[in-house]
Amino acid sequence: PLEKMSKVVCGALTVLLLCVLVVSQEEGINLKDGDQLGSAQLDGLPDMSEPETRKKLKCGICKASVMEMLYGYLKMETEEGRKLREVETVEILESACSLHMGEYGLVLDEAGKPTADWINDRAVLKAKGGWVSRLAMDTCNDVYNEFEEYLVAAAPKTCKIEGDERKCQVQPVVRHICQDGLRLCPKGSFPEEYAQEGAGGEKKEL
Image (cartoon, rainbow, N blue to C red; front, top):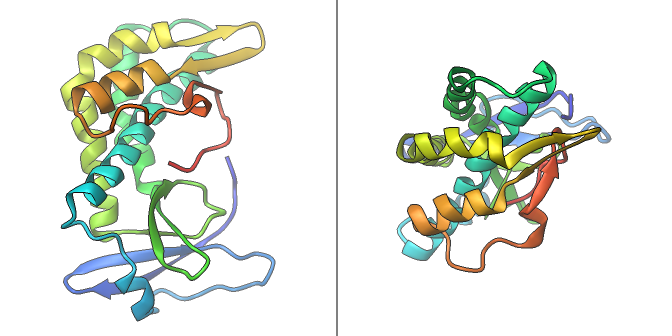
């Protein structure tokens, strides 16, 4: 994971708070808390009143939620060097939302406008806070609450340590939860790059 310092720049969006995470070590730019988002950024926010837009946003963050839970399990299993007990698995899956989903935000395009794509990379400019962060947290909680038993059973079978190779076969789990279960993702929304990824691998844009 990247260990870079960052500043959070917040602006008011009606009664909601939206924050833009700004990282720019090369230019040495450090914006201060309280700076306002430009009107172009506010106008460019995804329209949550549009069903398709809302579904795309929830599909992306549903995928991210499942991945965080499975990789959290794999990380702990790697550290312990053994298969985890059920109580340990429950604890890891249950804590994934509060530990990781606050890092997710919407990627900013070249014009600085928020897109409908999620990312948690601290080196990438993104919009977070307000309804954006609430949507990430709420969707993650829905995933865990509705599929707890399935996830607890699937994690040990999905994530494996084979010699020096550590990986999770996430695609079937994501499909079962986000596509077939919660019906947040349309069929065919799981490209091959989501099939497996090593523990501690580079985070992907969703």
